[in-house]
Structures are given as C-alpha cells and as structure tokens.
Length: 327
Image 1 (cartoon, one colour):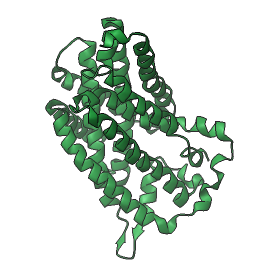
Image 2 (cartoon, rainbow, N blue to C red):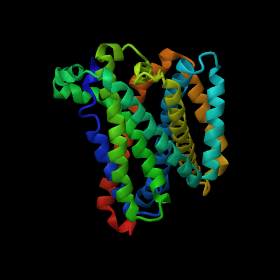
Image 3 (cartoon, one colour):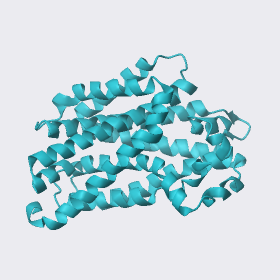
Image 4 (cartoon, rainbow, N blue to C red):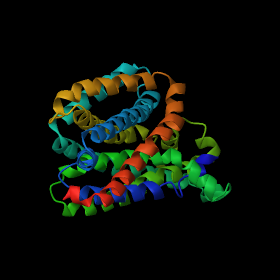
C-alpha cells in the first residue's frame, strides 16, 4: 500500500536541492562541485568529495542497470544473457563519455523526444482503465509516514541533482542555467510523478506492489482504440533510447569524479577502467533478483540521499563563510 502514498510529496526536497545546485555553481562557474570543494578546503577535501561522487555514480549505475536489464530482459528478450545487456551498456557508455557532452547532448535530444512519445502513448492508452478512486487512500497513514515512504523515490531525483552538479559548467551561457534548470524541473517532475499516479490508478496499489516492473505491466494493458493493442514493444524502444542516455551520462560523471580523485586533468584515460568497474558492479547486482531489489529498496536509498543532499548543502554553508576564496 505504500506505493499509492508516495507520489504526493516525494519531489519537494529533491526539487529544492536541484534548484540549489545552480546557485552553488554560479559562485564558481568554471568548475563543478569537486573543483569548488578544492577551492574551499583544499585538495584532500576535494578528493574526499570526488570519492563520494564516484561511489554515488557506482550505485546510480547499478540502479540504472536494474531498470535497463529487467525491463528489456523480462518483457522483450527473456532468453538473452545478462552479459549481452552489460556489454552493450559498456560500449555505449564508453562511446558517449569519450566524445563528451556534445555527443551525449545530441543523444539526449532524441531521448527527450522518446520520453515524450512514451508518456503520451501511455496516457492515451491508460485513461480508459484509470480509476481515480484508487488514489483516495494516499494519506491514510498520515503525512509523516507518507513523507518517509517517499524517500525511496527521491533517489531518482538524486541522480539528476548530482549529474547537474557535474555537467552544468559545460553550458557556456550562464544565463541559460536557471532557465534550463527550471524547464528540467517542470518537465522531468511531470514525467516522474505521472507514472506512479497512472500505475496506482490503473492497476491499484495492491497489484502494483506485486510487480518488480509494474510500469511494464501497466503498458501491457494499454491500448488505443481497437487498432493498436499491446504496443509495449513500441514503448520499450522509446524507453531504451532514454536509458542509454542515462548510461552515457553516468559514465561521463563517474570518469570525471575519478579523474579529480587521482589528480588528472583529462577524464578520458579513466573512461575504460571506470566503465569496467561500473559494468562489473552492475552485473553483480542484476545477476540476482533478490540482491537487486534489496539494493534498490534499501541500500541505495540509505546511501544516495546523504550524498545527494549533503554535498550541495555542505558547499552552500562553506561557501557562505568563505566567499572570498570563490572570487
């Protein structure tokens, strides 16, 4: 029953943190959070932050692999080996990281279109099955319990916050930082919040809780009129494009963090070693369903929130007391 209680308040804290990230980076716009930590408290503090960021994206990649592998393998290629998905992700991630943010940006443009098409198709096919009465028990356990349950979904927003903290300095026009961030919050928030609402309204909370990949079960019941039935194969293609963009960004951010950790000026020599680390850990996680679900529901949540919320807040406080160093 928890799944139908989370969507109402889960975006408040991470949205605030994501709004805070451009404010922090504007104080030292030529560098990311790791560069700024170096200016504030020196090299060792920067290496510590870099290590936390690297560990964060190691966990983020495992969460991405859980989504990527189980969506495709359970509903699209059930007989394919897990290594196939891991190798494809490794190749795509290395390619995007080697060629940089411009290539990833072009892929992201296609990914945005894919996500738009995916969400529009899903809404059109699900409205006929949607029952708003399934949403009534949202706050039946009280506001406090609802907020606490929402922490499992806040980890999705945490990935965005940490990614923005690294790639935002690549945007040359600082005037676009605020606009881009606001647009990302608006559209990203709408897309993320839409899914649990539709899942609960279409499947009910009890049924949703029984599936590892509940969104695909909802997609199976979606249909547009009498001509387009069971079009989850079309939607999985749109999903795959957007998830590959996430993989490339994860490789880029993890390699950047590793380069700052080891004091390298260029992250590219570390793309393959970091990619092997991410792929190995991702394979170990998804190889066992129980291990994957335990990591996604407990371990990942406990690790991601202190890092994604703590680093921006810590840098904000330190920067407020050490403004002269950032000038």
